[in-house]
Length: 351
Image 1 (cartoon, helix red, strand yellow):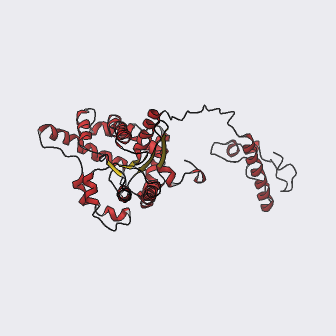
Image 2 (cartoon, rainbow, N blue to C red):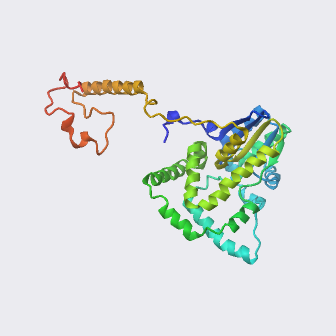
Image 3 (spheres, rainbow, N blue to C red):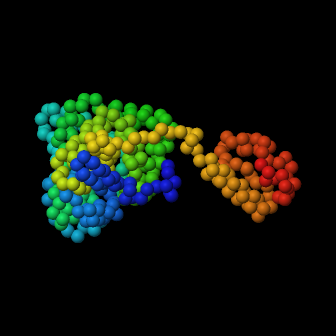
C-alpha cells in the first residue's frame, strides 16, 4: 500500500483528462461510486468551470425524470432515502416464461452469494445512480450542454448476455470463492480492502478508491466469476466508449461513469486516438537511488547514536529494521558487543 504522502487526492483518483489530437476533442472522464458528497460537489464544479459541449452520464432518462423532482438534496445520504422510489427506474425486467423462470432460479441465488462475498456496506452504492450524476445533469442543463444518457449498469441487454452465458452457477461461484485466493498475498489484500471499507464507511472509501484498488477489485471479480466479468465489465467498457466517442457532440466532453469502467474506457480511447503512453523498461540497477539509500543510512546512524547517548545504553540493533527471522534476533552476537563497557565505548558506533 502506498504511503500517505504518496497517495493522490480524491480528485485525482477519479478524474482522467484525455485528448484526441486528430479532432481536437477533450474528454473529462470521471469515475463515480455514487457514495461521496465531496466528489459530487467536485464534479459539479468541473462542469461549471469547463462548460462542456456535452455531458455523458451512465443512467437513463427515466431515472433523471424522477430524481430531478427531489429538491434541496444536499448530500448523498439524503438522496439514499429516496432509493426505494427509484427502483421503478431500472431498465431491466424478466418475463415469467419457462426460460426466464429457469434463469431466475440460477441468477438470483448467484447474485445474492456474489453480494455476500463482496460484502459492501449500506453506505457504499457503486451500482446505484447517485448524487454525482444528479448534480452533473443539473449543472449541464444550466449551461445548455447536450446530455447523453448511456443507460444504467444493468439493463435488458446485460441480462440477455448473462442468460445466454451458461457457465455460471452458485456451486462454481462458491468453489471459486474458497479456492481462488490460495495465494496469501491475495488473501491479505482481500482482508485489508474490506476491513478498510468496513472501518471507514462507503463515503470515505469512495474518496480513497484509486485506480490500483479498483483494478484489484476487478481482478477479484474475475477470479470469482471470469465469464460474467467479461460481460459486466469488458463488454460494458467497449459499449460505453463507443457511446462517448460517437454520440457525444462538441469539442469538450464530460463523462460520468461507474469507476470500474474508467480504465477500460481510457484504454479504448488511447488506442483509437493513438495517444497510448509507452511503458518504460524497468532497470532495477540503474533506477536504484544510491544517494538516497546512503542518506537514509546516515540519518539512521545519527538517530541511533543520539538515542543511545540519551539512554546511556548500547543500541538494540544496528540495522534499519528487524524481522522475526533476522540474524540479529537469532544471533545477536554477530553484530553486538559480547561485553558492553559503556555508552562512551568508541567502538560501539563504528559499525
